Image 1 (cartoon, rainbow over the protein chains, first blue to last red):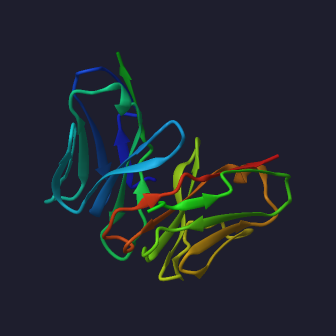
Image 2: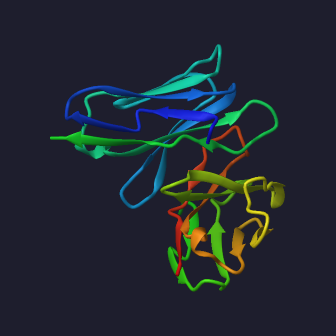
Length: 111
Length: 114
């Protein structure tokens, strides 16, 4: 949606390298969630953040706690299985409860 | 925990026919969401329920689309008089609460209208 601007739209990286994805929000967000969509189309939740940072293995995500206007997802030591389309999604502050999704980043990890 | 279950996984229907998609949320989850995914529009919110009550249907097309949640174990999305532009993957998701918890998605129902 217009509220969630995700970049880059596509990313190729070699095994063992690091990279970062970013989502900018046009309004303050209450929380953010990152997903990876695999080749079968399944959306797998990676992180849910209301603030701060979370880390899981080689993935780390951060949500700007002060302005609540952006979030990042870092991939460290990329592996082939990290390939997929990554989506960020966020809930605006206020009464809304449904996630608004970004347009996704297609990540290809090359051997 | 079987996750969110959606049926059918694939459906091909003729223009003008009705299509009904089913979703079984994760047991104990009080919030159920429906989204639609197309290449052009990406992931679009359609509607959601909390404790079976409809809360926000702002994403639902005004005509031909309806959603219900008759009990806590399933929700349906019905499309009447289907049109080719309704072709999409329809995704159902559930969470423990509506905005403060992780959202878990089913594998989706791919609808093709010919």
